[in-house]
Image 1 (tube, rainbow, N blue to C red):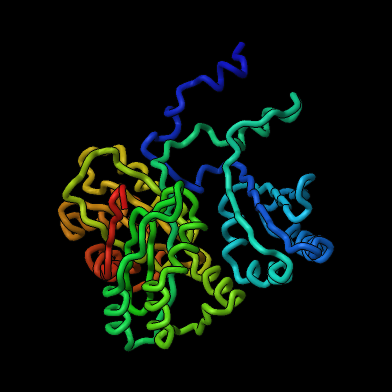
Image 2 (cartoon, one colour; image 1 turned 30 degrees about the vertical axis):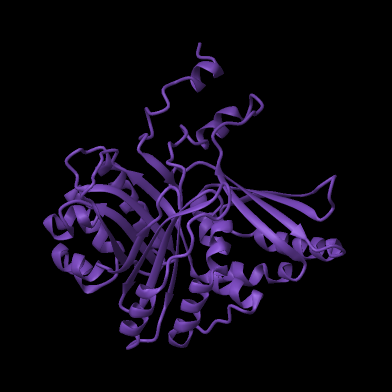
Length: 378
C-alpha cells in the first residue's frame, strides 16, 4: 500500500518539466490572498463594501469560496482569501471591466492592497474527500528563476505612432534597485501598430517595483509627454484615475518557460496574436503547450518564452537564436505542424485565416522600441 509520505516523495519532475517556471494552466485549484490596509475609522465602511462585493463574486463562474479576516493585533489590517476552481476563471474575472466597477466602493476606505495568487499543491483533507481533492491539486512544484514577469498595454491615436516611439525610446532608464529585496531586471518595450506593450522582469515585490518606476522623474516626464497621444485619456496625478488606468492596462504573464540551454546570441522579440472574440484563453493555452514541448528539444532556436494574456490580447515574448524568419512555424510557437490549423482557428487576422505562416509571422511581429537589462549591482 502506498502511503501519503511515499506519494509526496515521488520524483518532482515526472509530470512537470523543471524548465517551466510559471504557468496558470496546471488545472489545479487556486488560492488568492488579498492583504488590505484600511483607513483608520473606515472599518465598518469597508465591511459593508466587502459584503456587497462578496454577494456579487459568489455568482462568478469558477469561484468556490472566500473568507474575510481581521487582524487581532491591528484592526486596520484585513485579509481576504478566496478559492477558485483554477487560475483561468479568476484571471478572466479580475481582468474584466466588471471587476473594475465591482471594487470601486472599496477604494475610498482602503489605503493599500497586495494580491497574491497560489496554486494549491498539498492540503490536509478528511478521508472521504481526499481522492477528489487530490485530483485538483498541482501535481508537482514548478522550478522558478526568482523573477516576476508582468506587462502593461495601451493604445495611442493612429498617426501618432512615430512620435510616440521616439518619446518611448529616448527616456532615461530608472534606477534598478528598488529596495534591499526588490530590483528591476529588464524592461522590453514594443509597438504593434498603435498598440504599446511594456514587459518587465522584477526580482522581489512586483507592486513595489511598479510604484518605484511610477515615482521616477524621468518616467513621469515620458508619461506626461505621451498623454496627448493616448486613445484613452488618463490623469496620473489623480490616484483613482491612475489606479483604474493601470488596472485596465495590466496584461499578466500566464506562462513562462526557458529551454535550459545557454544562448548568448539570442535576441528578444515579441509577437502579437489578436484572438477571436472569447478565444484568448484557448489561444494562450495552445501557445503555452507548444512552448513547453519545444523547451525540451535541444534543437529549438527558442531559448525562452513568456506569454501575456488579457481578454483577446495575447503577446508572446521570446528569446530566439537565428532570427524570427529562419523557421516561421517555430517562431510562431508551432513545433507541432498538426496544431497550425488550431492556431489559425483561434487567432484573428487574414494571415491566420489563410494559414500562410510566413505572412502571419509578418503580421504578428512587434517593433522593438527599447530592451534594457540592469546589471546585478545597479
